Image 1 (cartoon, rainbow, N blue to C red):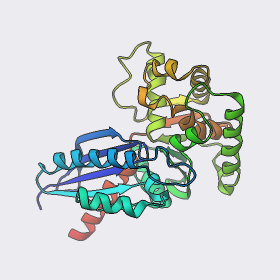
Image 2: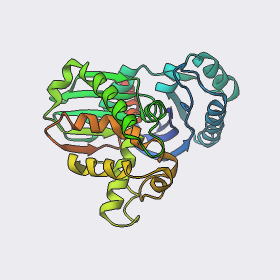
Image 3: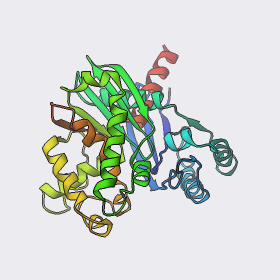
Image 4: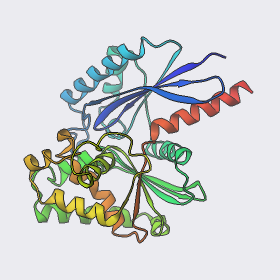
Amino acid sequence: MVEENLAIVDLGSNSTRMAITEIAPDGRFREIKRVKENTRLSEGMGREKVLQKNAMDRTIAALKKFKKIYSTVPNIQVRAISTAAVRQAKNRQEFLNRVENEVGIHLQVLSGKKEAYYDYLGVIRTLKLNHCLILDVGGASCELILVQQRRARDLISLPVGAVNLSEQFHLGGYVRATDLFRAQVSMNERLTKIPWLRYATRVPIVLLGGANRTLARMTRAYHHHGRRHSSGSIHGYQLSSRVVFATYRELLSKNLAQRKRMPGLEPERADIIVGGMLPLVSLLQRNSDGRVIFSESGVREGIITEYVNQRKKHHE
């Protein structure tokens, strides 16, 4: 067996990412390249759930860039997945056909449950936690997984995320009290309908997804006064609910221009960060553990884990 390279293209609602992983014959793997483009595919989908032409064009341009990169890698396998934006779109077939025709990539649309399960696989492989609640906040959905004794006891995908919450409730600029209240009531109604969440009140929350990574970088930049620590891995980084609430209050006191200047917050995420933090803030208000732990592993790592395990079986 020679070593293989696996390119995972992950088409999110806010960004398009690619990770190229080298897999050794013994099943060990390491990432050799990671790229990201801010494509905001779910922009302007609205209630009609229609992918907009500009957003599709931006995404296809990013995919062409990625293809140029992975085409230079030997023994490459490509796995391309898309999540909430494409999953929810009325015109998803038109988009999938365009990607197939213009880029030559076959996109697999992950169900919310499958996305949540890959999140679980990715987290459990890298964090030593027996019990936790995993929260992955994407652009157009969030996944919740209750882990007990290292098993995924329950999981769900909700069709709300950083981009669509921010658009629906006008959370992009300075946030009016009425808008925030409407957003909070709506989020709480969704959470109350999940019967098993009451078993998750005393466990730490493990955070995945772009909005949550932004929160980690902001908090780190704030506590280290300056930007020098705001890069680097946030894997395993821990916060208390108190600190999360303080950061949220800070964001709510600013308008868009002021937010864009905050250390650790990428300017292109400034208009969706309040919406992106809403699911976490709502969960923390019901949670007495108070610990929040960041994970850099998620769907992509879950897919690699599955791929390596299947490969082992295949060669046994």
